[in-house]
Each structure stands twice: as C-alpha cells, then as structure tokens.
Image 1: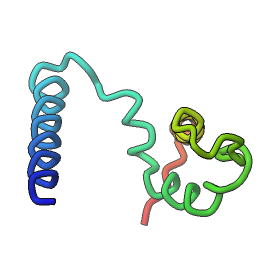
Image 2: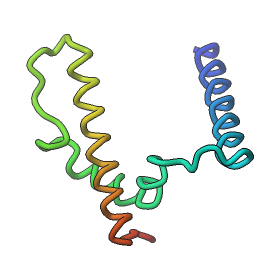
Image 3: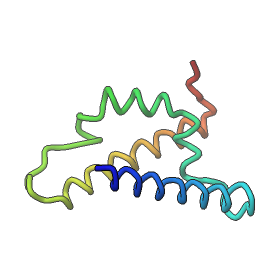
Length: 97
C-alpha cells in the first residue's frame, strides 16, 4: 500500500541520515562489520545465489510454522557470509568488474 511504501521510505531515509551523521560527520563508528561485505559485495551476492540453498548456509526446517527457526537460519547464513567476507578482506582479495 502507499502508506507502507511511504513509511518505509521515511524510515530508511532517517536511518541513512543517522548512519551518515555517526560515521562520516562525527567519526564515532567506522562501519564495521558492514565494511567487509561491502568490499566484496559481488562475491557475496554471487556466492549466496549459488550456495544459499546448501547445507552450511541453510538447512531443512523441522517446524515450518516457526518464525524463530527461519530467523535463526537467516542470521546464521548472514553471519557466515560476513565471516567469509572478513577472511577475504584479511587476505586482500577483492572481486571487481
């Protein structure tokens, strides 16, 4: 609906403004852990597209009605991709087009 689109657009604008103020203006935070996947965003995107449905990133859920299991699966997959991106960042491997 239009009200949902406008409220989510407003929320994302406020979040972006807050992050800009905290990171760029004041320098209170340097953007970790978002920096590591951002340096290899193409690698993370392609890796998730190819391997996102295989075991270490996802598994067969036992309780289909449980939102907690779905949340845990998505948080685990995201944490693994951030870890992979961090390891690639440490080895100075950056995929560019």
